[in-house]
Image (cartoon, rainbow, N blue to C red; front, top):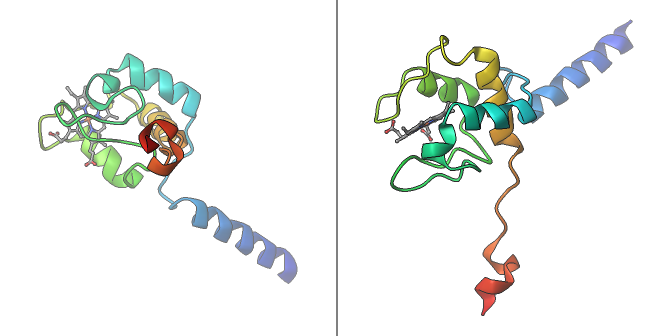
Length: 116
Ligand code: HEC
């Protein structure tokens, strides 16, 4: 019994190490579609890369989910708000999963064209 508890604690511990407890499990594939349909890409780019003129980079390492969702619900700058009427919490979690799953940018030294 004690041993089982120890295994359970170890499992919980490793889950925490991967993502903060407040990070919901989302579906990255669905998130990619919602990100496009709801127009996030228009200001943040199709790959979340951002653009100086329209909106900041969002991925591949997005800000913590609590801060992320707070901003999407109640932005303080030029971004339009997305309330739960137009974007559910589950959909927002899917968008977040999509942004987390984006591949990291390659290092400059690994891009042949930039070595010329
Ligand atoms: C009309 C343009 C526009 C659209 C559409 C838009 N954003 Fe933004 N977003 C911005 C701008 C501009 C900022 C920078 C802060 C500001 O001015 O509000 C921003 C900031 C953010 C931030 C905070 C980033 C940070 O590092 O602080 C998040 C998160 C975010 N947007 C997520 C989204 C998501 C998710 C969607 C789609 C559901 C979306 N945005 C749609 C323009 C947009």
